[in-house]
Image 1 (cartoon, rainbow, N blue to C red):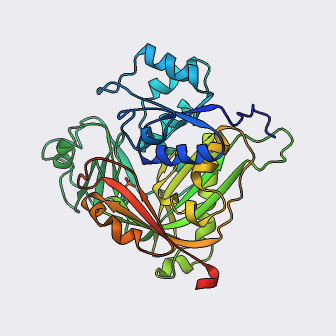
Image 2: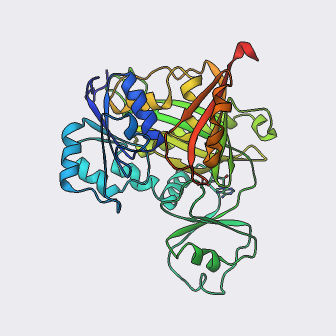
Length: 380
Ligand code: AMP
């Protein structure tokens, strides 16, 4: 038992956002006897809306009326998040009605801003790429002024995802030109890291119990990730033998410890996913956080005793943790855009979990589903 109140099966759990992460949270919640109410841009006709007990859409401009929020809050015992760019003001309005949001508005405020999360990682002694804030035009950054002294990436501080809001600048390229493309919104300029591979770790955390009987957190990973055009293409667990950097001792431990340190310092109640670069010397370098289930954790559905989605539900409802033991190895591959037309090829594959999110239009770059190939150690 935790010292915070247990939310019992039968309760309605709220979810903000209605995409595939919300859908998979809702399915995990249903297995434990909960219902979910979903508030997001798509309402009933959305991946999460298709499997929800209650689903309504907010206005196209993102505004949630007082009446709609009252209706949602009357139903739910706790609110979860499937998208980190949910407006903090919306989360605060829910908290002001006495409904806990996991994670809280305090965590979201940091996780939504690339500058704040990098400052936090740096203050905790976690290596970060060299970066600087580009917020106001100065003598340095202005038309025809400063150029980069190394290959860099200009990223919007807020609202970027799947490689959106990012521009690569070659060494000697103009910061101003890139910034103009990003409409002069607040950005960070960071060095392009020559990484050998990318990894992620997912932490589930609840505040510690008074008697300290239940561990504060469970940790998944590191997972090994491959991105294409800023979008996750593939995740493998355990990490492969393809990268010399991964043979340096302590790489996995460094990533797990860094993610755990961040989760504790944020005092997160829920999930924290942390992405890292690993350079040729085996140094683990912080990239970004997401305070929610993460695409790289989808293979926990097929490969571990308790998926990241169920663990999130357990955290939000103050239940004991499920076992995070991995019984299988796996490779998750995203189905992006038009690739969804090949779904039957995947459906025929043995030892393959096929997940289609039920999204209407297969727009380019849109995550339409994923497959997880899985095998047990006996098969290797
Ligand atoms: P992000 O949204 O910041 O995670 O960026 C998406 C992907 O772009 C990352 O997973 C990397 O593959 C690449 N990327 C982002 N930042 C950097 C960087 N500083 N150096 C090299 N590659 C990067």
